[in-house]
Image (tube, rainbow, N blue to C red):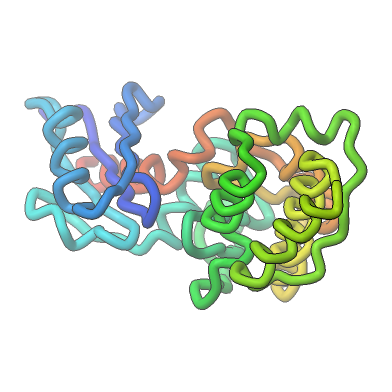
Length: 252
């Protein structure tokens, strides 16, 4: 009898895969999406699939691109189930992806009660941070070190194009790059919190996506939401994990 399920989440920036045995995630994989997301999904499928896999669920922007998929589920549902698996009962979830951000209101069992999605503007997404790091010549690994000594510089524009010009201007004026980075991060968190608070979230909020690995984002979001924000070492894999959890239920 098949004992594993495979979840694959094809996002705009990365493709994630997760194998689930009904109790724990036994193996994961992450690749950059590149210009051929379907090929990346197949690479993850080929690397993780084995004879014990009984069901494959795909999610994300490219969920229709893998012909081997048994079921295709929206990323909203998969992120909700993944967050519930990783953190238990939650009031809500915030996901900051490469090109969009999501706020999801959750039932105690991880089912979706309501959600909002911002997919019209790159401001407040991972692309915005990539732009900032490129101009400031810093790596993502430096973001948490900036908060130890820095004083955020206010960034007045949240349009990616205008913010880029503003950052360049601040550098020309001699502003510290760490202070600029903190200002950008604070602006993103303020925008995300304002967006999420349109939903009546209560209790803990789970933070997923690649930016969830940085404490500076979690702390800013917690302050602006005025509630506990929790993450997990596998937060970036939340969608793939949720897809695998859903797949395992199909096996049973």
